[in-house]
Length: 502
Image (cartoon, rainbow, N blue to C red):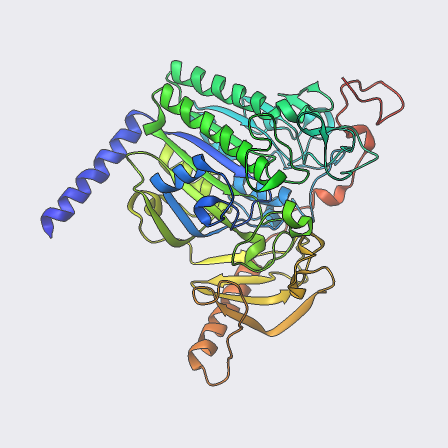
Protein backbone atom coordinates (compact mmCIF):
# COMPACT_ATOMS: atom_id res chain seq x y z
CA UNK A 1 0.00 0.00 0.00
CA UNK A 2 2.86 2.35 0.91
CA UNK A 3 4.57 1.65 -2.43
CA UNK A 4 1.35 2.46 -4.30
CA UNK A 5 1.05 5.77 -2.48
CA UNK A 6 4.67 6.61 -3.22
CA UNK A 7 4.19 5.86 -6.89
CA UNK A 8 1.01 7.96 -6.94
CA UNK A 9 2.82 10.84 -5.26
CA UNK A 10 5.66 10.52 -7.78
CA UNK A 11 3.26 10.85 -10.71
CA UNK A 12 1.59 13.84 -9.07
CA UNK A 13 4.97 15.54 -8.68
CA UNK A 14 5.89 14.61 -12.24
CA UNK A 15 2.62 16.10 -13.51
CA UNK A 16 3.07 19.32 -11.53
CA UNK A 17 6.68 19.68 -12.65
CA UNK A 18 5.73 19.19 -16.29
CA UNK A 19 3.10 21.91 -15.93
CA UNK A 20 5.65 24.26 -14.36
CA UNK A 21 8.21 23.55 -17.10
CA UNK A 22 5.77 24.01 -19.93
CA UNK A 23 2.46 25.73 -19.12
CA UNK A 24 -0.48 23.88 -20.69
CA UNK A 25 -2.51 25.30 -23.54
CA UNK A 26 -6.29 25.50 -23.39
CA UNK A 27 -8.91 25.16 -26.12
CA UNK A 28 -12.47 25.83 -24.96
CA UNK A 29 -15.24 24.73 -27.33
CA UNK A 30 -18.75 26.01 -26.63
CA UNK A 31 -21.68 24.84 -28.73
CA UNK A 32 -24.92 26.81 -29.05
CA UNK A 33 -28.36 25.36 -28.24
CA UNK A 34 -26.97 21.82 -28.33
CA UNK A 35 -28.96 19.25 -26.36
CA UNK A 36 -27.80 16.45 -24.08
CA UNK A 37 -28.84 13.89 -26.70
CA UNK A 38 -27.50 15.56 -29.85
CA UNK A 39 -24.05 13.97 -30.22
CA UNK A 40 -23.22 10.52 -31.52
CA UNK A 41 -21.19 9.82 -28.37
CA UNK A 42 -24.27 10.67 -26.29
CA UNK A 43 -26.45 8.26 -28.19
CA UNK A 44 -27.97 10.11 -31.13
CA UNK A 45 -28.45 7.55 -33.94
CA UNK A 46 -27.97 9.84 -36.94
CA UNK A 47 -25.70 12.69 -35.81
CA UNK A 48 -22.36 12.64 -37.58
CA UNK A 49 -19.76 13.92 -35.10
CA UNK A 50 -16.59 11.86 -35.65
CA UNK A 51 -14.22 14.38 -34.05
CA UNK A 52 -16.29 14.96 -30.94
CA UNK A 53 -16.77 11.20 -30.71
CA UNK A 54 -12.99 10.84 -30.89
CA UNK A 55 -12.56 13.31 -28.04
CA UNK A 56 -15.11 11.38 -25.97
CA UNK A 57 -13.50 8.00 -26.71
CA UNK A 58 -10.00 9.19 -25.84
CA UNK A 59 -11.01 11.63 -23.11
CA UNK A 60 -13.39 12.03 -20.20
CA UNK A 61 -17.11 12.26 -20.91
CA UNK A 62 -19.37 13.87 -18.32
CA UNK A 63 -22.93 12.73 -17.62
CA UNK A 64 -23.79 15.38 -15.00
CA UNK A 65 -22.43 18.66 -16.34
CA UNK A 66 -24.43 21.89 -16.07
CA UNK A 67 -24.52 25.38 -17.50
CA UNK A 68 -25.92 28.18 -15.31
CA UNK A 69 -28.73 29.50 -17.48
CA UNK A 70 -31.10 28.08 -20.08
CA UNK A 71 -30.32 30.98 -22.48
CA UNK A 72 -27.21 32.35 -24.17
CA UNK A 73 -25.74 35.54 -22.68
CA UNK A 74 -25.94 34.66 -18.97
CA UNK A 75 -24.54 31.20 -19.62
CA UNK A 76 -21.52 32.71 -21.41
CA UNK A 77 -20.93 35.21 -18.63
CA UNK A 78 -20.76 32.39 -16.07
CA UNK A 79 -18.43 30.30 -18.22
CA UNK A 80 -15.89 33.08 -18.61
CA UNK A 81 -16.04 34.45 -15.04
CA UNK A 82 -16.75 31.40 -12.85
CA UNK A 83 -19.65 33.34 -11.28
CA UNK A 84 -23.40 33.04 -11.49
CA UNK A 85 -24.83 35.54 -13.95
CA UNK A 86 -26.76 37.25 -11.15
CA UNK A 87 -23.47 38.55 -9.77
CA UNK A 88 -22.29 40.09 -13.05
CA UNK A 89 -25.70 41.49 -14.01
CA UNK A 90 -26.14 39.51 -17.24
CA UNK A 91 -29.89 39.04 -16.76
CA UNK A 92 -32.80 38.97 -17.53
CA UNK A 93 -32.74 37.29 -20.93
CA UNK A 94 -30.00 38.09 -23.42
CA UNK A 95 -28.11 41.03 -24.89
CA UNK A 96 -29.04 42.54 -28.27
CA UNK A 97 -27.10 44.30 -31.05
CA UNK A 98 -27.88 47.73 -29.63
CA UNK A 99 -27.67 46.85 -25.93
CA UNK A 100 -26.26 49.64 -23.80
CA UNK A 101 -24.84 47.20 -21.25
CA UNK A 102 -22.55 44.19 -21.47
CA UNK A 103 -20.25 42.05 -19.37
CA UNK A 104 -18.89 44.61 -16.87
CA UNK A 105 -15.22 45.38 -17.37
CA UNK A 106 -14.54 44.81 -13.67
CA UNK A 107 -15.46 41.14 -14.14
CA UNK A 108 -12.40 38.95 -14.69
CA UNK A 109 -12.51 36.52 -17.62
CA UNK A 110 -10.46 33.36 -18.15
CA UNK A 111 -8.39 35.29 -20.69
CA UNK A 112 -7.61 37.98 -18.11
CA UNK A 113 -6.61 35.32 -15.58
CA UNK A 114 -4.08 33.88 -18.05
CA UNK A 115 -2.66 37.09 -19.55
CA UNK A 116 -0.29 37.87 -16.62
CA UNK A 117 1.38 34.49 -17.25
CA UNK A 118 2.21 35.40 -20.84
CA UNK A 119 -0.55 33.49 -22.58
CA UNK A 120 -1.63 34.37 -26.10
CA UNK A 121 -5.43 34.62 -26.10
CA UNK A 122 -7.97 34.54 -28.91
CA UNK A 123 -11.72 34.17 -29.32
CA UNK A 124 -13.67 33.31 -32.43
CA UNK A 125 -17.39 32.88 -32.98
CA UNK A 126 -20.42 34.06 -31.04
CA UNK A 127 -19.47 36.50 -28.28
CA UNK A 128 -22.92 37.64 -27.07
CA UNK A 129 -21.66 39.54 -24.03
CA UNK A 130 -22.19 42.99 -25.46
CA UNK A 131 -20.73 45.38 -28.02
CA UNK A 132 -21.43 48.76 -26.44
CA UNK A 133 -20.29 52.25 -27.36
CA UNK A 134 -17.08 52.11 -29.43
CA UNK A 135 -16.76 48.38 -28.77
CA UNK A 136 -16.60 48.76 -24.98
CA UNK A 137 -17.60 45.15 -24.25
CA UNK A 138 -15.97 43.27 -27.13
CA UNK A 139 -13.53 40.39 -26.45
CA UNK A 140 -10.52 42.64 -27.11
CA UNK A 141 -11.57 44.68 -24.06
CA UNK A 142 -11.98 41.54 -21.95
CA UNK A 143 -8.53 39.95 -22.12
CA UNK A 144 -8.45 38.54 -25.66
CA UNK A 145 -5.61 39.58 -27.97
CA UNK A 146 -7.59 38.72 -31.08
CA UNK A 147 -11.21 38.17 -32.06
CA UNK A 148 -12.99 37.03 -35.19
CA UNK A 149 -16.71 36.52 -35.11
CA UNK A 150 -20.28 37.69 -34.90
CA UNK A 151 -20.62 39.59 -31.61
CA UNK A 152 -24.09 38.19 -30.86
CA UNK A 153 -26.54 35.55 -32.10
CA UNK A 154 -26.56 35.17 -35.86
CA UNK A 155 -30.37 35.30 -35.91
CA UNK A 156 -30.30 38.87 -34.55
CA UNK A 157 -30.60 40.44 -37.96
CA UNK A 158 -32.66 39.95 -41.13
CA UNK A 159 -31.82 36.63 -42.74
CA UNK A 160 -34.66 35.82 -45.13
CA UNK A 161 -32.57 36.83 -48.15
CA UNK A 162 -29.30 35.31 -46.91
CA UNK A 163 -27.91 31.99 -48.11
CA UNK A 164 -27.52 29.34 -45.41
CA UNK A 165 -26.77 26.29 -47.58
CA UNK A 166 -25.20 25.93 -51.03
CA UNK A 167 -25.77 26.61 -53.78
CA UNK A 168 -28.36 29.23 -52.76
CA UNK A 169 -30.72 27.79 -50.15
CA UNK A 170 -32.07 30.71 -48.17
CA UNK A 171 -32.05 30.71 -44.39
CA UNK A 172 -35.08 29.12 -42.77
CA UNK A 173 -37.31 31.67 -41.08
CA UNK A 174 -37.16 35.45 -40.84
CA UNK A 175 -34.83 35.99 -37.87
CA UNK A 176 -34.94 39.49 -36.35
CA UNK A 177 -36.11 42.33 -38.57
CA UNK A 178 -35.70 46.06 -38.09
CA UNK A 179 -32.07 45.74 -37.08
CA UNK A 180 -28.72 45.81 -38.87
CA UNK A 181 -27.53 42.88 -40.94
CA UNK A 182 -25.36 40.44 -38.98
CA UNK A 183 -21.70 41.61 -39.09
CA UNK A 184 -18.44 39.68 -39.07
CA UNK A 185 -15.90 41.51 -36.92
CA UNK A 186 -12.13 41.17 -36.72
CA UNK A 187 -11.01 42.57 -33.39
CA UNK A 188 -13.13 45.74 -33.30
CA UNK A 189 -13.54 46.34 -37.04
CA UNK A 190 -16.42 45.10 -39.19
CA UNK A 191 -14.99 43.12 -42.10
CA UNK A 192 -18.25 41.97 -43.67
CA UNK A 193 -21.92 42.92 -43.34
CA UNK A 194 -23.90 40.75 -43.80
CA UNK A 195 -21.72 37.78 -42.95
CA UNK A 196 -21.25 35.06 -45.56
CA UNK A 197 -22.54 31.95 -43.77
CA UNK A 198 -21.19 29.57 -46.41
CA UNK A 199 -17.62 30.75 -45.83
CA UNK A 200 -17.78 31.50 -42.10
CA UNK A 201 -16.46 28.20 -40.73
CA UNK A 202 -13.55 28.23 -43.19
CA UNK A 203 -12.67 31.71 -41.92
CA UNK A 204 -12.80 30.45 -38.34
CA UNK A 205 -10.62 27.46 -39.16
CA UNK A 206 -8.04 29.66 -40.88
CA UNK A 207 -8.04 32.08 -37.94
CA UNK A 208 -7.58 29.28 -35.37
CA UNK A 209 -4.89 27.50 -37.37
CA UNK A 210 -2.91 30.71 -37.71
CA UNK A 211 -3.30 31.53 -34.01
CA UNK A 212 -2.23 28.08 -32.78
CA UNK A 213 0.64 27.81 -35.28
CA UNK A 214 2.00 31.25 -34.40
CA UNK A 215 1.85 30.57 -30.65
CA UNK A 216 3.49 27.17 -31.08
CA UNK A 217 6.32 28.64 -33.18
CA UNK A 218 6.93 31.24 -30.47
CA UNK A 219 6.69 28.53 -27.79
CA UNK A 220 4.05 30.69 -26.16
CA UNK A 221 1.22 29.09 -24.16
CA UNK A 222 -2.20 29.90 -25.55
CA UNK A 223 -5.90 30.00 -24.79
CA UNK A 224 -8.37 29.65 -27.67
CA UNK A 225 -12.06 30.20 -26.94
CA UNK A 226 -14.43 29.02 -29.67
CA UNK A 227 -18.08 29.74 -28.89
CA UNK A 228 -19.68 28.35 -32.05
CA UNK A 229 -22.87 29.57 -33.71
CA UNK A 230 -23.76 25.93 -34.31
CA UNK A 231 -26.36 24.60 -33.77
CA UNK A 232 -28.45 27.74 -33.09
CA UNK A 233 -31.30 28.64 -35.45
CA UNK A 234 -31.12 29.32 -38.36
CA UNK A 235 -28.80 26.45 -39.15
CA UNK A 236 -26.22 26.94 -41.88
CA UNK A 237 -23.39 24.93 -43.43
CA UNK A 238 -20.88 25.39 -46.21
CA UNK A 239 -20.04 22.93 -48.99
CA UNK A 240 -17.91 20.73 -46.71
CA UNK A 241 -20.91 19.69 -44.61
CA UNK A 242 -24.11 20.63 -46.44
CA UNK A 243 -26.13 17.54 -47.36
CA UNK A 244 -23.57 15.18 -45.81
CA UNK A 245 -25.41 14.12 -42.66
CA UNK A 246 -28.50 11.97 -42.25
CA UNK A 247 -30.12 14.52 -39.97
CA UNK A 248 -31.02 17.35 -42.33
CA UNK A 249 -30.08 21.01 -41.75
CA UNK A 250 -29.46 20.56 -38.01
CA UNK A 251 -27.21 17.57 -38.64
CA UNK A 252 -25.30 19.39 -41.37
CA UNK A 253 -24.69 22.38 -39.09
CA UNK A 254 -23.49 20.06 -36.33
CA UNK A 255 -21.20 18.26 -38.77
CA UNK A 256 -19.68 21.57 -39.87
CA UNK A 257 -18.93 22.42 -36.24
CA UNK A 258 -17.38 18.99 -35.83
CA UNK A 259 -15.28 19.53 -38.96
CA UNK A 260 -13.86 22.75 -37.51
CA UNK A 261 -12.99 20.87 -34.31
CA UNK A 262 -11.21 18.31 -36.50
CA UNK A 263 -9.17 21.09 -38.09
CA UNK A 264 -8.17 22.37 -34.64
CA UNK A 265 -7.10 18.90 -33.51
CA UNK A 266 -5.08 18.38 -36.68
CA UNK A 267 -3.31 21.70 -36.08
CA UNK A 268 -2.54 20.78 -32.46
CA UNK A 269 -1.02 17.53 -33.71
CA UNK A 270 0.91 19.14 -36.57
CA UNK A 271 2.44 21.77 -34.32
CA UNK A 272 3.37 19.15 -31.71
CA UNK A 273 1.42 20.68 -28.82
CA UNK A 274 -1.53 18.31 -28.55
CA UNK A 275 -0.04 16.45 -25.58
CA UNK A 276 0.26 19.71 -23.70
CA UNK A 277 -3.23 21.01 -24.50
CA UNK A 278 -6.45 20.60 -22.54
CA UNK A 279 -9.48 20.63 -24.83
CA UNK A 280 -12.80 21.24 -23.10
CA UNK A 281 -16.15 20.97 -24.86
CA UNK A 282 -19.70 21.73 -23.71
CA UNK A 283 -22.77 23.78 -24.67
CA UNK A 284 -24.39 27.01 -23.47
CA UNK A 285 -27.90 25.65 -22.86
CA UNK A 286 -30.35 22.98 -23.94
CA UNK A 287 -32.01 22.52 -27.33
CA UNK A 288 -34.55 24.96 -28.75
CA UNK A 289 -37.35 22.41 -29.01
CA UNK A 290 -39.80 24.91 -30.52
CA UNK A 291 -37.85 24.46 -33.78
CA UNK A 292 -38.85 20.77 -33.79
CA UNK A 293 -36.43 18.73 -35.94
CA UNK A 294 -34.33 21.86 -36.47
CA UNK A 295 -34.06 22.48 -32.75
CA UNK A 296 -31.97 19.73 -31.21
CA UNK A 297 -32.60 16.89 -28.80
CA UNK A 298 -32.40 16.63 -25.01
CA UNK A 299 -32.21 12.83 -25.03
CA UNK A 300 -33.90 11.40 -21.92
CA UNK A 301 -33.99 14.77 -20.16
CA UNK A 302 -37.12 16.87 -19.60
CA UNK A 303 -37.84 19.98 -21.70
CA UNK A 304 -35.09 22.18 -23.14
CA UNK A 305 -33.99 25.78 -23.69
CA UNK A 306 -35.61 28.40 -21.51
CA UNK A 307 -36.51 26.02 -18.66
CA UNK A 308 -34.84 24.98 -15.42
CA UNK A 309 -35.65 21.33 -16.03
CA UNK A 310 -32.67 19.09 -16.76
CA UNK A 311 -33.07 19.42 -20.53
CA UNK A 312 -32.56 23.18 -20.29
CA UNK A 313 -29.30 23.19 -18.34
CA UNK A 314 -27.67 19.73 -18.30
CA UNK A 315 -25.21 19.54 -21.16
CA UNK A 316 -22.87 17.18 -22.96
CA UNK A 317 -19.29 17.83 -21.86
CA UNK A 318 -15.93 16.31 -22.77
CA UNK A 319 -12.38 16.85 -21.49
CA UNK A 320 -9.49 15.69 -23.68
CA UNK A 321 -5.78 15.80 -22.89
CA UNK A 322 -3.67 12.96 -24.33
CA UNK A 323 -1.34 11.42 -21.78
CA UNK A 324 -2.90 13.30 -18.88
CA UNK A 325 -6.62 12.52 -18.90
CA UNK A 326 -7.44 8.82 -19.02
CA UNK A 327 -10.37 7.74 -21.22
CA UNK A 328 -13.55 7.18 -19.27
CA UNK A 329 -16.93 8.44 -18.14
CA UNK A 330 -17.58 10.41 -14.97
CA UNK A 331 -20.88 10.78 -13.14
CA UNK A 332 -19.48 13.48 -10.88
CA UNK A 333 -21.33 16.79 -10.88
CA UNK A 334 -19.57 19.67 -12.61
CA UNK A 335 -20.42 22.98 -14.25
CA UNK A 336 -19.28 25.68 -16.63
CA UNK A 337 -18.62 27.66 -13.44
CA UNK A 338 -15.74 25.29 -12.73
CA UNK A 339 -13.81 25.99 -15.94
CA UNK A 340 -12.11 29.20 -14.77
CA UNK A 341 -10.86 27.81 -11.42
CA UNK A 342 -9.67 24.64 -13.15
CA UNK A 343 -7.73 26.47 -15.87
CA UNK A 344 -6.26 28.82 -13.27
CA UNK A 345 -5.12 25.85 -11.17
CA UNK A 346 -3.53 24.02 -14.10
CA UNK A 347 -1.79 27.14 -15.37
CA UNK A 348 -0.64 28.26 -11.92
CA UNK A 349 -2.57 31.52 -12.26
CA UNK A 350 -3.98 33.66 -9.49
CA UNK A 351 -7.73 33.58 -8.96
CA UNK A 352 -9.73 36.83 -9.10
CA UNK A 353 -10.29 38.37 -5.67
CA UNK A 354 -14.07 38.12 -5.90
CA UNK A 355 -16.75 35.66 -4.84
CA UNK A 356 -16.35 32.69 -7.20
CA UNK A 357 -19.03 30.03 -7.60
CA UNK A 358 -16.82 27.53 -9.43
CA UNK A 359 -14.57 24.83 -8.01
CA UNK A 360 -11.38 23.25 -9.30
CA UNK A 361 -12.12 20.14 -11.41
CA UNK A 362 -8.50 18.93 -11.56
CA UNK A 363 -9.27 16.00 -9.26
CA UNK A 364 -11.94 14.77 -11.68
CA UNK A 365 -9.86 15.37 -14.81
CA UNK A 366 -6.50 13.99 -13.74
CA UNK A 367 -7.51 11.27 -11.29
CA UNK A 368 -11.16 10.66 -12.24
CA UNK A 369 -11.77 11.41 -8.58
CA UNK A 370 -14.60 13.02 -6.69
CA UNK A 371 -16.00 16.43 -7.49
CA UNK A 372 -15.66 19.31 -5.06
CA UNK A 373 -19.07 20.45 -6.26
CA UNK A 374 -21.86 19.39 -3.91
CA UNK A 375 -24.66 21.58 -5.25
CA UNK A 376 -25.92 23.20 -8.43
CA UNK A 377 -28.26 26.19 -8.44
CA UNK A 378 -30.88 26.76 -11.12
CA UNK A 379 -31.94 30.31 -11.96
CA UNK A 380 -34.60 31.04 -14.61
CA UNK A 381 -34.01 33.31 -17.59
CA UNK A 382 -35.29 36.23 -15.50
CA UNK A 383 -33.79 35.75 -12.03
CA UNK A 384 -34.94 38.01 -9.23
CA UNK A 385 -34.35 38.41 -5.53
CA UNK A 386 -38.08 38.07 -4.94
CA UNK A 387 -38.30 34.51 -6.27
CA UNK A 388 -34.70 33.41 -5.80
CA UNK A 389 -33.70 29.95 -6.99
CA UNK A 390 -36.14 27.97 -9.10
CA UNK A 391 -34.37 24.68 -8.35
CA UNK A 392 -31.39 23.24 -6.52
CA UNK A 393 -29.48 19.99 -6.86
CA UNK A 394 -27.75 18.35 -3.90
CA UNK A 395 -25.99 15.08 -4.69
CA UNK A 396 -28.37 12.97 -6.74
CA UNK A 397 -31.47 14.87 -5.63
CA UNK A 398 -33.02 17.90 -7.30
CA UNK A 399 -35.68 20.10 -5.71
CA UNK A 400 -37.95 22.36 -7.77
CA UNK A 401 -39.32 25.33 -5.84
CA UNK A 402 -40.85 26.81 -8.99
CA UNK A 403 -41.54 25.33 -12.42
CA UNK A 404 -42.43 27.08 -15.66
CA UNK A 405 -42.50 26.26 -19.35
CA UNK A 406 -40.94 28.39 -22.08
CA UNK A 407 -41.58 29.48 -25.64
CA UNK A 408 -38.19 28.00 -26.56
CA UNK A 409 -39.39 24.55 -25.47
CA UNK A 410 -42.92 24.67 -26.86
CA UNK A 411 -44.20 22.15 -29.47
CA UNK A 412 -43.12 19.17 -27.35
CA UNK A 413 -45.81 16.70 -26.23
CA UNK A 414 -44.86 17.37 -22.58
CA UNK A 415 -47.24 20.05 -21.37
CA UNK A 416 -44.83 21.10 -18.61
CA UNK A 417 -42.40 22.41 -21.23
CA UNK A 418 -44.76 24.66 -23.12
CA UNK A 419 -45.18 28.40 -22.69
CA UNK A 420 -48.73 27.80 -21.40
CA UNK A 421 -47.22 26.06 -18.37
CA UNK A 422 -47.21 29.23 -16.28
CA UNK A 423 -45.16 29.85 -13.16
CA UNK A 424 -46.11 27.44 -10.40
CA UNK A 425 -44.76 27.45 -6.85
CA UNK A 426 -44.15 24.15 -5.03
CA UNK A 427 -44.22 24.01 -1.23
CA UNK A 428 -42.88 21.58 -0.35
CA UNK A 429 -40.66 21.48 -3.44
CA UNK A 430 -40.86 18.69 -5.98
CA UNK A 431 -37.95 16.36 -5.29
CA UNK A 432 -36.52 13.99 -7.90
CA UNK A 433 -33.86 11.30 -7.71
CA UNK A 434 -31.89 12.13 -10.84
CA UNK A 435 -29.99 8.84 -10.84
CA UNK A 436 -33.18 6.78 -10.93
CA UNK A 437 -35.29 9.35 -12.79
CA UNK A 438 -33.20 11.72 -14.95
CA UNK A 439 -36.36 12.60 -16.90
CA UNK A 440 -37.92 14.20 -13.80
CA UNK A 441 -41.14 12.30 -14.26
CA UNK A 442 -41.76 10.97 -10.77
CA UNK A 443 -41.54 13.32 -7.77
CA UNK A 444 -40.66 11.45 -4.61
CA UNK A 445 -43.42 11.14 -1.99
CA UNK A 446 -42.36 12.71 1.30
CA UNK A 447 -44.90 10.98 3.51
CA UNK A 448 -43.49 8.16 5.57
CA UNK A 449 -39.94 9.01 4.43
CA UNK A 450 -37.99 10.50 7.33
CA UNK A 451 -34.84 10.33 5.20
CA UNK A 452 -36.43 12.61 2.60
CA UNK A 453 -37.75 14.92 5.30
CA UNK A 454 -34.19 15.28 6.56
CA UNK A 455 -33.02 15.88 2.99
CA UNK A 456 -35.67 18.57 2.57
CA UNK A 457 -34.47 20.39 5.67
CA UNK A 458 -30.90 20.24 4.36
CA UNK A 459 -32.01 21.58 0.97
CA UNK A 460 -33.89 24.46 2.60
CA UNK A 461 -30.83 25.33 4.67
CA UNK A 462 -28.52 25.30 1.64
CA UNK A 463 -30.98 27.41 -0.34
CA UNK A 464 -31.35 29.94 2.46
CA UNK A 465 -27.60 30.29 2.95
CA UNK A 466 -26.92 30.65 -0.77
CA UNK A 467 -29.64 33.23 -1.37
CA UNK A 468 -28.50 35.22 1.66
CA UNK A 469 -24.99 35.36 0.21
CA UNK A 470 -26.08 36.30 -3.32
CA UNK A 471 -25.58 39.96 -4.17
CA UNK A 472 -27.34 40.77 -7.45
CA UNK A 473 -25.29 42.95 -9.73
CA UNK A 474 -26.91 45.79 -11.63
CA UNK A 475 -28.84 44.34 -14.56
CA UNK A 476 -26.92 45.12 -17.74
CA UNK A 477 -29.78 44.02 -19.96
CA UNK A 478 -32.31 46.26 -18.21
CA UNK A 479 -30.24 49.27 -19.31
CA UNK A 480 -32.07 48.89 -22.61
CA UNK A 481 -30.95 49.42 -26.19
CA UNK A 482 -29.84 52.28 -28.42
CA UNK A 483 -30.20 51.86 -32.19
CA UNK A 484 -27.06 53.96 -32.70
CA UNK A 485 -25.03 51.26 -30.91
CA UNK A 486 -25.91 48.57 -33.44
CA UNK A 487 -22.71 47.65 -35.34
CA UNK A 488 -22.65 49.33 -38.75
CA UNK A 489 -19.73 49.23 -41.18
CA UNK A 490 -20.80 52.62 -42.52
CA UNK A 491 -21.95 54.42 -39.36
CA UNK A 492 -22.76 57.70 -41.10
CA UNK A 493 -25.02 56.14 -43.73
CA UNK A 494 -28.77 56.64 -43.94
CA UNK A 495 -31.35 55.21 -43.73
CA UNK A 496 -30.38 52.81 -41.00
CA UNK A 497 -30.44 49.90 -40.51
CA UNK A 498 -30.79 48.90 -44.18
CA UNK A 499 -27.80 50.95 -45.35
CA UNK A 500 -25.37 49.03 -43.12
CA UNK A 501 -23.76 46.84 -45.79
CA UNK A 502 -20.18 46.37 -46.92
